[in-house]
Length: 285
Image 1 (cartoon, rainbow, N blue to C red):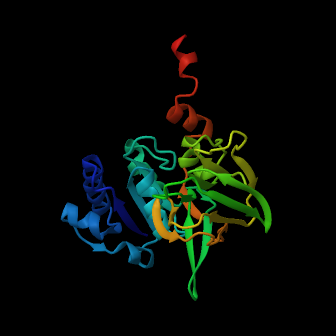
Image 2: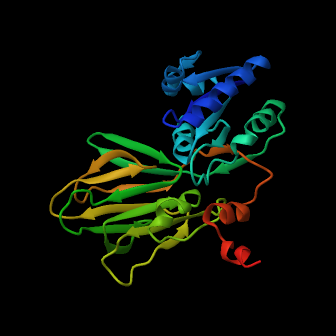
Image 3: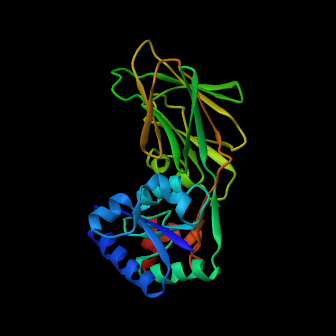
């Protein structure tokens, strides 16, 4: 077993944990390799570029918040990812810092379980090339610097759903329902639900609401505007500037992300802990 380790180098606590993890793995003669930027910050070896870790490693360890886990998962592809929360909310990072060594031990002895998370796949034509991007949380098309309010035309399996006048459109997986979509007023969806949610950003229409659809649908989005460029973001990373009327298709990706599960936690506990649900009730006891 060989681990690829990715660290949020902007968090001192993550760097401390990474050094402790390296010592712990060395004592047990377990192979590991750090992502290059993490290794340079810590002045530690061995290291390899993030793009190459998948070829060298059997599993990944992410030390940071949800953003670090999202970054790691894109390069892990289908290999197991252990998420250690050194961030704030941490919806995706299953394990606390105190649980780090026990989580790694579970993977080493094969006693771990997996949460398989569906991804989105965004496809757009770029000249003679078809570009494909994957996102675990969401695909977002925004108005960017466009000075007016454009209309986002949405079709489901080729049939018109609506034209949304808004600052943008979020297409989120069930995993991503607690990310940007929730901030924009979208519903919380249990992670293994086979659905997507389409959430408008600051809609300029009183009757527009988020809509939940089956994840077997093909969603086509284009921006109706006379000019301008419109950012296409996948999991918060800019992938392309879309031209007016340039279509993008979003569907369920055939590639899943395999997150190592914390069997001591359940989804209800996560919501109560992260969103402080029931805190008012507890305070009155």
